[in-house]
Image (cartoon, rainbow over all chains, first blue to last red; front, side, top):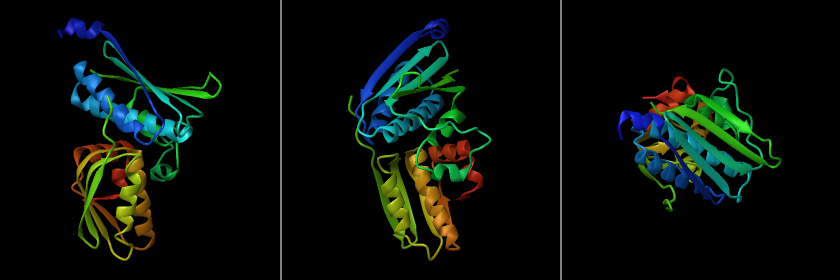
Length: 140
Length: 102
């Protein structure tokens, strides 16, 4: 892939996982395989693995047993990772707010890690009963 | 594609020292918690994390929980030989300044 292709490419991946504690491993593996095929560098792939792990763990905690959907797209240098689940997302803590004690609470705090690794995190609860959390970051 | 479920292995080097390898996520975090707690709270506990290939906040919760339990008992949980992925996680969360990392 040359530089011009890299700037203009747009690709998409979509997967569904059963709601279990194994969903995170599946999502990390699928996302990493796809990002490697897109020539995304190792450091970004490592961050993406952590992001998708937190999003899917959170989705599982919000609605154990319910399917969750992972949608990821790469548009030029901008990577989005979105996980949709039933139920709520938990609060996205302010970065200045969170500390070690936050990690002890049972859910939602993984979003602090997602927030730290992403340029933006958007929680969409506009469809009643469903939550989509979308993290956006640059891969260059 | 179906990914293998996450797995960890725990080797006890002594009553108060263990090394952990593998993937610590929501599937395996309870195993890590149990392993750390099995060392008791009557002495410092050292956990070598050199073989940890991946850890997310689920694993971190186990570590912080046992850190606090040992702290309350007047002892320390020492995280030794942290792998790059663990080091990065501790930096992102700012926990490197709160936990005992050697």
